[in-house]
Image (tube, rainbow, N blue to C red; front, side, top):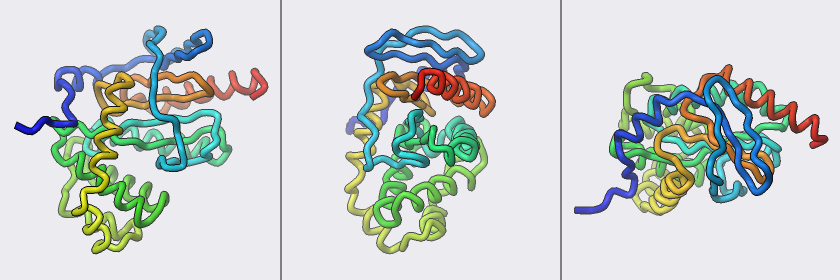
Length: 236
């Protein structure tokens, strides 16, 4: 039997998806806790690959606050958090202080089509660039109800709407050349402590912290306002 590269214990996934809590930071310096509603506690040091130009970034690639989200296109909590992050970027993206980085964390046990959707998004990015990637991602999330999975017959429609040639897209998809990248990002998320989706990691300088589950807009906004105030007070 072939080993599922996207396997995470389902009980842990469900528990993590329902968690509410705070953001906490850890790094080489003294830890700094910034609590929202809920408990906050120091985390073990989080290690993820650094953000580079190969990532899918919305906003200033040199922003002092980076939210690196490991996400699953068919996750209902990810759909909600995607809308939250769109509002956050509407508020903070233009000012250059916050950037949103999207990485893949497809939980195939719960969402069988999630790995293919991630590969599809990567093909769209190859053929259409960063703007096409984000437009495709927005369509995947917006064109389904919260508790529904993506209608895969509509993927070519989303590809075309993102401005990508569907024939070239299908050739890319059939090649399978991005499966290993998606698997690697899944493994990176697990290694960083991810047990459910979404798994957003806030990066500020050399410190990293996790947002526990799909926190609502008001909580994420409060967190960012606090971080911006701290950066401003420190002279950054």
